[in-house]
Amino acid sequence: MNEAPGSSSPPPAQPAVAASAGARHVARNYAIVTAAYWGFTLTDGALRMLVLLHFYRLGYSPFTLAFLFLLYEAAGVLANLVGGWLATHYGIARMLAVGLVTQIVGFVLLSALDPGWTAAMAVAWVVVAQGICGVAKDLTKTASKSAIKITQSQVQAEAREQARGGSQGQLFKWVAWFTGSKNAMKGIGFFLGGVLLETLGFRGALWTMAGLLALVLAGVLLSLPPMMGKKQASRSVRELFAKNPGINALAAARVVLFGARDVWFVVGVPVFLYSAGWTFTMVGTFLAVWTIGYGLVQALAPQIVKRSADGLSNEVPAARLWSAVLAVIPAALAVAVWLQVPNLEWVVVGGLGLFGFAFAVNSSVHSYLVLAYAGSEKAAEDVGFYYAANALGRFIGTLLSGLLYQWGGLLYALIGSAVMLLVCWLVTLALPLAREDSARAAP
Image (cartoon, rainbow, N blue to C red; front, top):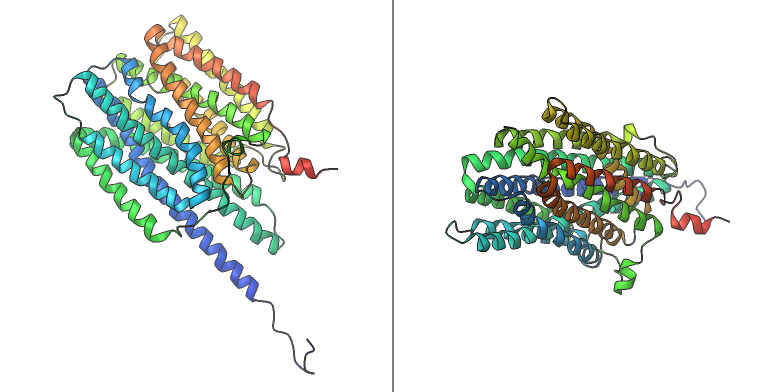
């Protein structure tokens, strides 16, 4: 179109204004999802401490305590796989709401536990209720972490429009902060669970947490767009499982990484410390402080691990290095337990601190890598597949935690952890240094 003489074109300000408004909207959704997941994680950490302390006080064996959490962990495997597909098909916000509702249902069922029931009936009831809570946890986690990838993809698109870079570094920071803050909230939840059990009792604590989650649910329903993250989902089971080599290798590493943590952390450490003369409050407080510190290290992982422009060339070697470092710690602790060194409980506490630091860096790097490898179109499915492996690792670790501790005490649990971490390091050697799409595009 020809312009009239003397006329001038207006400055192209509209795209910049739109980009700024889009960035604010993206940041708002990210903040809402994070706050909702914080609320959920607070109650989830409290639930674990409630169940562990309440039933240990009733005289349940280490294996029975582990058994109470088995369906909780097993349900997470299916919940992650199905939840990723559902979040892609129906939207992340809807699945986040479904996860919150499911957790409330689990709390209500647990609160209906009757002290007059037989031990078998009580265990069966708790296992089923815990299974429901396990589904809730992993639906919520998959939806929340998928939202980060959606957010990063939107920011990346705006960065391209404005000729900016650095979105991969920003993604690492977001993932690390989200994961670290989540674990800090879980640690506070451990402390909260002990306090609520002492002040309100088992049933009163559960009703209080259900009320808190109801408020979080209302905030999600009123604040998030219901179709957030909706994409074309996989059309077959085979397509759902056909992931790229990076995600497949990470999933395998995640199974043994989290199995190695829970094989001595779920039952072994709390029971060992209690048998050494610690009170329930001391055990709960220590685990809370450990988990909060673990979360803080996760949030600081981007400062510990050198980042690369492509998001993989430094991060993948870091995953391999920290896996090797982590494997040494339970092996050294196993030797200390075998030799019965003086002040053994404090040696274990110190070793657990070192383990927590190295594990936090490992976990944060892995959580970043899965989103770096994932495609934005089906990010929820990729994340769901990865966290299904995470849940499988927790299931295996929880089962072995009760069995190994009952068979050989903390020594057997530590040996099991060291072996699993050796396998984790071997698997990380298969992690690719380039994304699948980048590798195909290369000449």
